[in-house]
Image (cartoon, rainbow, N blue to C red):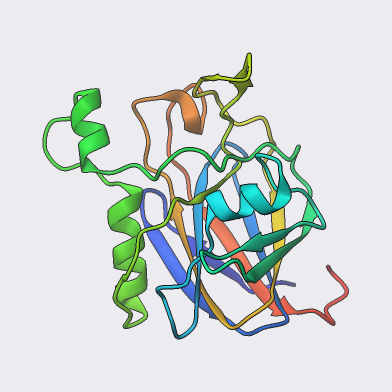
Length: 205
């Protein structure tokens, strides 16, 4: 049985990975978007970069077998398994206080930008850069080559994505607290998600 670690609803979490380890990110309830980041350990200024990854892959969304690249164009992770429909997003920035203010929120609103900083701080680390996240399970259709929309996830409970670390890294997650748009389902309810870490010799990958 995998040792599951909690990504609390509306909050963040982070962990260290050694090169060769495998990470499974689990959409426990099926409708929860997970903002996902990875950083070189110990140089957090080198980070997984969506713009560099898109340029290297020549497509918007990584698929199984693809590598994910840093802002120094080095491979940091490889996607080795995806049991979901494969609908993820690399275009949208992590939510922040300004986004919720624009949407009409009054007072503080949990957000993925703060969640990343808090998750790294829990490991005794200080954020150096704030890269765009790999938004796992997030459904942002691109229509007519130019138009975007925020839609509900299309997966099911228990869907997961697995990544192999290609360098020692710090990975971080946020169970996105966006409850003013339907990106976490039409009911806008925010749920926990989970992750597991294990070695490549584990037969479950």
